[in-house]
Length: 159
Image (tube, rainbow, N blue to C red):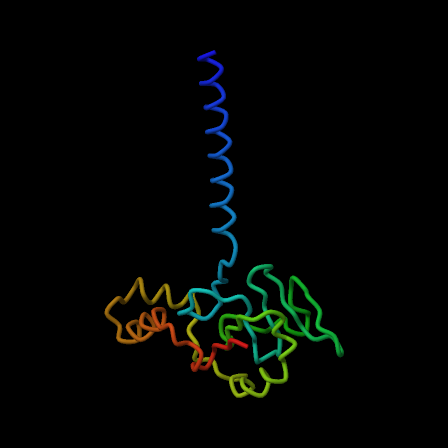
């Protein structure tokens, strides 16, 4: 009887360990930002890309682009964007459901950023932070990460 109890406790413990491990694995993978995403944001569900008037879904790693009058989802950008550089272009963080339904608002508010190439992406920011920790610009971007009042900043949209 004692051996049966020990065996049952062992099996229950192993099952709980597997469930807990699976939960940790899932939560780590969901919402991981691409290296070309803008630096300074702890969370982004979608990016609006003004230069090509398209959206990127971070969770599913897909693009939402306009095809005629419809919005379609695709894993890769169409061939007409083959020379497009995601690291260089400006991205707007959009944390709302189906942001393409507010596309006219996004075009109106962010079309002036179509040719703005000054935004620092995650890859370049991490490199700068690791190579030059006393750089003045790093302090500005470090403060951006802690700022809870993001709504008024260009590059952040919460509709």
